[in-house]
Image (cartoon, rainbow, N blue to C red; front, top):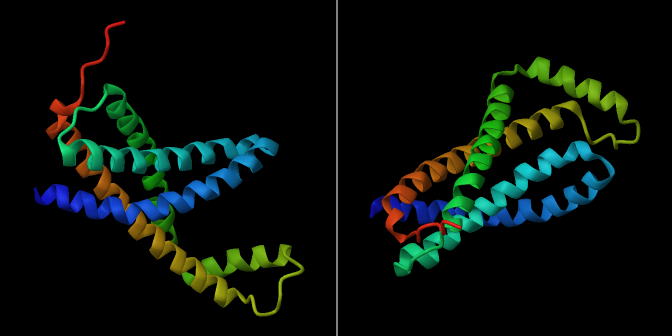
Amino acid sequence: MQQLTIFKILTFILVPFAILFGLMDIILLLSALANPAFLFAVFLVGGFCIYVFASLFFMTKHIKHNMPAPASTKDWIRVNAFVSLFFSFMFLMNSLSMFYMGDAELKNIIDKFLDTQSKLPAEFTPALFVKLMRSISYFFFFFSLVLLAHLSICFKLLKQYAYLFLPKDPA
């Protein structure tokens, strides 16, 4: 029962991020129409959003009320959980690489970036960008850990509550 409580807490932590990422995904989808290279990012973010809402739906409707769920619900959760797993590992690896990158190396990269941006105000200094990048890295690190914990518990709950899923139609 404690595992279910942790799962509920993690789910409700992830829901606002799923909403925010979902809105950003719509904008990214519009950009992907002009640049198809963005379609992979649209797929990853969309898979994360679907996973969070499918697991929320499974927890609130089926686990809480002990109601049977169609087999497709389990499929939606599992498939999008694997997409979210990749999404989370990408965030984790990006944040870890930022942690292990020295300030001098990061400042060098930011200097090269700022050289290409001629119209930035003077307040945007390399030191500010280093601080900003470190802050974003911490956020993505903790976000990916929360998502990985949620995914781990979700797979356990799918096995534990397997009796709630209706069998697939043979046709």
